[in-house]
Image 1: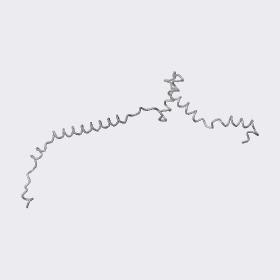
Image 2: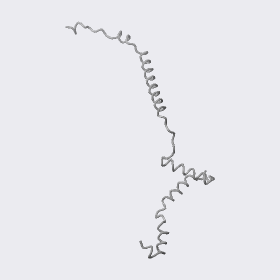
Image 3: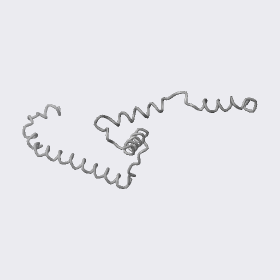
Image 4: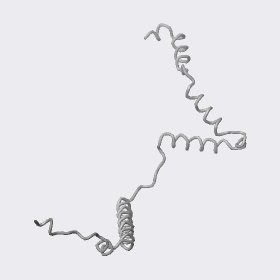
Length: 119
């Protein structure tokens, strides 16, 4: 508001007030790069380090491109999985019926006197 009255002070204010009050973002950048460049990776070129950092940032923010799913293929795969499950369950039921016979169960059942029940 008073820049016209104090042009020198206004210029100084614009220069110094533009400086960030916090260096958190730059500290975070150097820290991430320090993790990437370790004793084992000290010969990485600058462009490679930059590409690694960009990829880490994209992954962290979930901005990486993913393969677009074909919904028809997903539905077919789901149907195939359901069919496979039904086939497996029926095969299990068949194997159980091979081990169990109703005839054996009926033959081994005790005789019941039905005359007492009817009276």
